[in-house]
Amino acid sequence: MIEVQQLEKNYGFARALKGISFSVSKGEVIGFLGPNGAGKSTTMKVLTGYLLPSGGGATVSGLDVVSHSLKVRRNIGYLPETTPLYGEMRVDDYLRFVAEIRGVGFTKRKAAIARAVELCGLARVTGKNIDELSKGYRQRVGLAQAIVHEPPVLILDEPTSGLDPNQIVEVRKLIRRLGEEHTVVLSTHYLQEVEKSCSRVIIINQGEIVADGTHDSLVSERPAGALRARVRGPEEQVTARCTEALPGCRVEVVARHDGAIDYVLEAGTDAAPVAEAFSRMVVQNGWDLLELVREKATLEDVFRALTQEAQREALHA
Image (tube, rainbow, N blue to C red; front, side, top):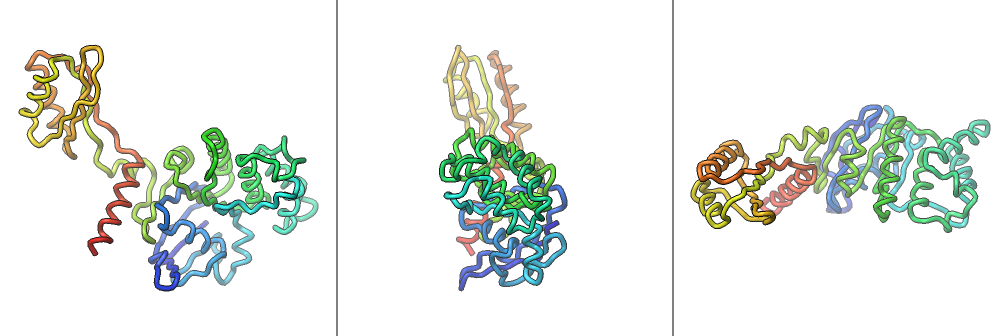
């Protein structure tokens, strides 16, 4: 549905996109992640025909975004970060207006609007002016205008920006529903949103793609986190024996309760020997090992590691 090849975009001497390439298949929901200024919004603006690329190219539904710009836009539903709404219009009038300028035929218009209203949960507010709506409902109206012409591709730039936690959950559910019928590219800063809604993750940093894969594949490539242990025994002795038995391993007390001590052991990438040595040490000293677990890496760990690594490399270049 989307094919991007060596896409570049320059703003004067600043290179916003440095030859990125990726593809999106039919039915995928892609989480497009990156820190501020990474190139996310620029990529989306090129795909939607809002900006011309400086080099490379992109296609949507097999149509080139430059030479077939109008046809591409007919195949896309776009929700920019700032939702384009006319506050003085009623919700139903606004959706009718959007459907008309989107080329939805008169005979299909009523059904198309009804579908968008139902999907976005707007039935209670169709007779209200948009200015009267809460931020969450205005965002839903923005999503409704993006899908009213039933495009095969949806491009959503920060769809939950500025929403409260309850509204975020509602919009997230809506995005999952939309993903059943559309190919979706979702740009966001909320990693939990990507974990809950997206089948694949692309991470961009400083105009370059630094990761592309499923949530599970990206997380599995990173080393797991620290070891966490709970031991019942004399704290000073346990801590001292940990330091002796595990040279080079950072040992920290993080909690105390019910006569037990919680430890974090920063053991590096090779956790198995450390876990075995720690268990053996506790048992040999006659203390109780109540818990020993290895923290799993998260998408946040992956994101921070990749973007921070790229920033460090750029500083040293």
